[in-house]
Image 1 (cartoon, one colour):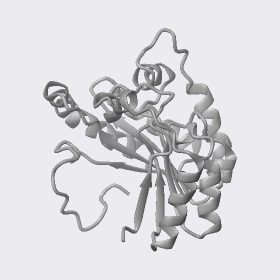
Image 2: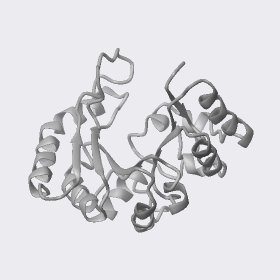
Image 3: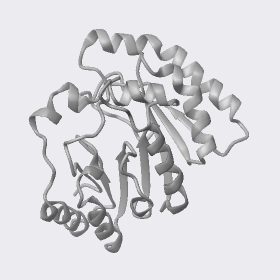
Image 4: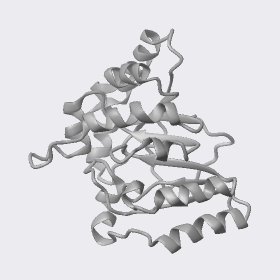
Length: 240
């Protein structure tokens, strides 16, 4: 049986990230599902019963939109199975952080303005939530169960924010940052991402040099360009 179990508590999201696969393929619009409580809790029980070692709560959408996600996390804790979560941080609380072994917050920017452009689609009707998220991260860190990290999906519109993003991560005191290229179905947009990668990786190196005395680890990968559909032949995870 699988050792890692992945569940999407919600296909609905409170962000509008331009590179989101689930917006690109229409899944968030065509299947706006929030899992019922009994299904989500049964998923946790099945993972434990079949010998799973970790449950990844992620999405299609924002997992914490589902009001039963915290209960499912607590159930997993009580059954002694590890938990992981990818979240945009808007609904992150100390109570959630205390239940997640491996927490990753998809920030995708180092400044409020870029966060509004990238995560909120520069929507004039959307004020953004940068300050709320940063405050949530600060409050969550003292309660983290194991590690808490920030993610940066880099695109041709946000890659110049890599330095302020890494500086912010060091100031917040997170364990590491994970920087990876956006995936686009559209060939022209994919080519634009490929074109900026050398400069983006140079900015990662600059951040490593500048923050060399900090405990922060900066991980960056480039090999997501071939998409999700090609065979994977890794013997180990190169990202973390």
